Length: 135
Image 1: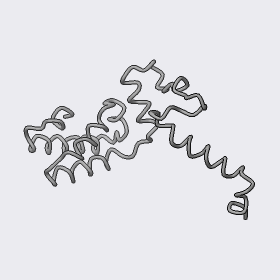
Image 2 (image 1 turned 30 degrees about the horizontal axis):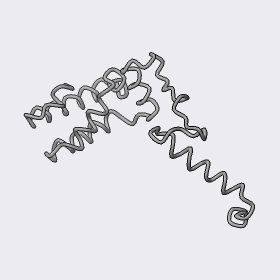
Image 3 (image 1 turned 90 degrees about the vertical axis):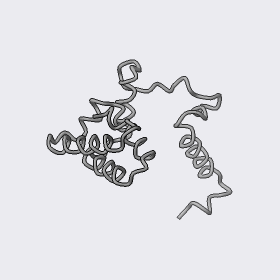
Image 4 (image 1 turned 180 degrees about the vertical axis):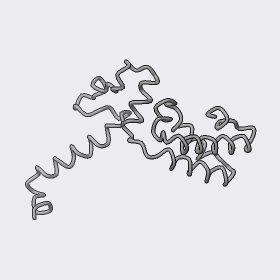
C-alpha cells in the first residue's frame, strides 16, 4: 500500500492505495500503530498531499490522515530516529551542537527558541525597561 501511495505513474493506483489505507486503519482500530510500524508513513503522506494534483486524492489523503489521528511531534522524531538507527534509544543528542555562547548552533532546530528566550530574559532583567513589563 505504501509503495502504491508513492506511485507517480497512476493516479488511480494512488487513490485506491489511499482509500485502502484508510479502510484498513478504520476497520482495525489501530490508529497510531501504522506510524510506528512504518516510520516514513507520515512524511510520505505529507509529501504526497503537497505534490498531489488530483483534488479527490488530496481530499482522500486528508481523510486518511484524520483517521490515522494526530501524533505528537516528539513521538514522530523518536520513531524516525529509531528507524534511522540513531543509537537505538530514540534520543537525539544535541549536546555537541552548541556554540561558544552556549546557544545551540544556528542549524539546530533549538537555536531560535533558545535565542528568543535568552533575549526575553535580557529584556526582563534590564531595569531601564521595567516600566514596560511590570503590572
